[in-house]
Image 1 (cartoon, helix red, strand yellow):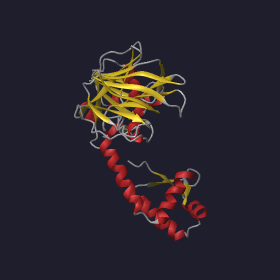
Image 2 (spheres, helix red, strand yellow):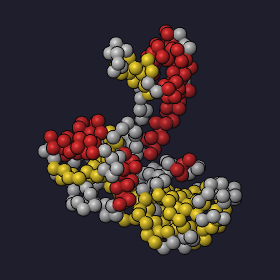
Image 3 (tube, one colour):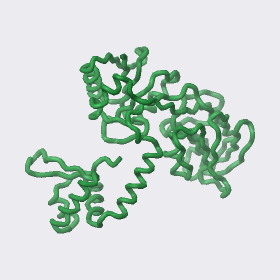
Image 4 (tube, one colour):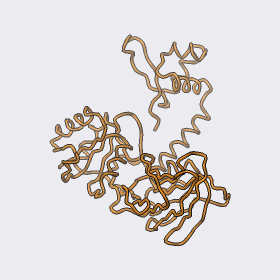
Length: 332
């Protein structure tokens, strides 16, 4: 088995750690660079979701499946494995006992010029906030609307739980063969998000504003646009290795709903401790009592509740091994 490792802008330590783990399991690996991009059975991409997006932005012929790795404790939809837990999954990777999800990409043309394909969304806005932008939307050559508003977003299913959801768009199941289009803060109150087949040709034309307008790709790069943005399904799709079953946008949304319900039923003292740790960072039990002005017994019981629920974790102080420090856990 041959595995490539890609880590644009990530630490060399993480790459060496991955190589060491793979080598211990008799798996050949190589670092992917601009001058070294040979065939691999799969690609390990460091840098979390952003790293995976960067990889697919520069890789048009995405034939090898990708496993995204988070170096910290940040959960993601594209990168689902943390560096510290990679060793427990390497045998599954070696046996190729995993599923591969094909994630659709949007091909984009700005004023007739191709740019890189995106995984999440294409957003068109005025270069200055709070300034109206005018545009015409066409799908498969037919005019859908002529609109004035803050802008417009075209999103893939995996991007539907990000920017587009924050402006009122629906969350799409990731295996849906559709794209969604959302008018942002239109002056016409009848404008609603629309769902189109992912075989559709989407054209945003006659773009204008008092200042110039910009196209934002995957929330990362901005390009000046004079008149037209064209979007269509890009072939091939991105291939993402799934080692865990509960990392879709829908499952993440469900977790957030359960978390909100849990927080509503949580004792006030536990909520106060959770907020204190969120704003203050790591604290001892005594620090928490001093900052919240709660009795020691109440703090102790609240911490016990939060530890049991997994919202808080406990570790030993480096300065004093007898002292315990509490901090917010990663909530998945």
